[in-house]
Length: 311
Image (cartoon, rainbow, N blue to C red; front, top):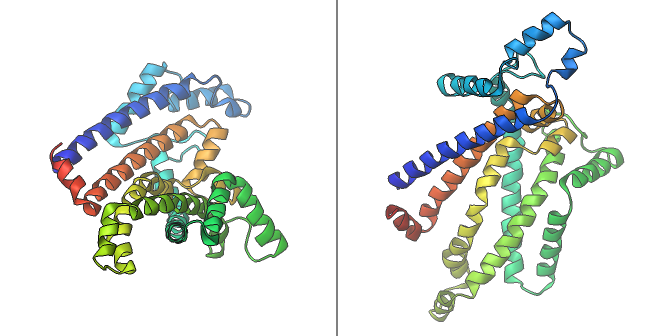
């Protein structure tokens, strides 16, 4: 397991280096000037100081060398162009927890409801509960998240007046973004749980357990759930990363001061440093989450743990 983990960590570092390099040069290949808005308002001498401050007066390869040196030696992702004086690292440390708060609640609700609905659908195949769950899952997959968010704001804010349409700071502000985000998780896990449970129920060892007189509850808890959950764990990696990154559109629509909100603004304002810094954070978080999920496989299925020792 240790050898496997070390190999994965080395691969993660190599992948992260490639992501940083590609993102950096792609951002600097985009036509236009990130300081164009400032150029309209500031004197030429002051503008030159800003170009020097962000290193934009140097060739791109030299800018890349300076960026990598600061990142590796000091862990410094740079300073935001759109928000002068605000470091990228500080922005991430302050906004990621905000995204994590409502993202964690959304994930837990989506997992619990999605797995429960999937189990219900599988155990009642080709009956009305199965059709209802399939309809909910299809709705969650087909309905764009921004459309659902707008509908929730229309119903619960404008029509009923129960919940605030945007903002942050009270439990009431959690409700609408959590509902809008959780539907996609519910739909995904309901579909996969249903198909995985049906596949496990058709296995020979389930028939053997039934022939031995094992109760229906015992079969579900000891055989079906454990074997059906393994494929579902695979999807946890991206979902765990999404807890901290949040949803760009939802945080913008609901005015949540999370990392997704700032990333969205950085794209629209062409804030090179913020885009590169948050992309590095997203990539690192995604890879760490996938590593954690892979290590969880060994806890769920000992056969995988044995296989890893042989790598």
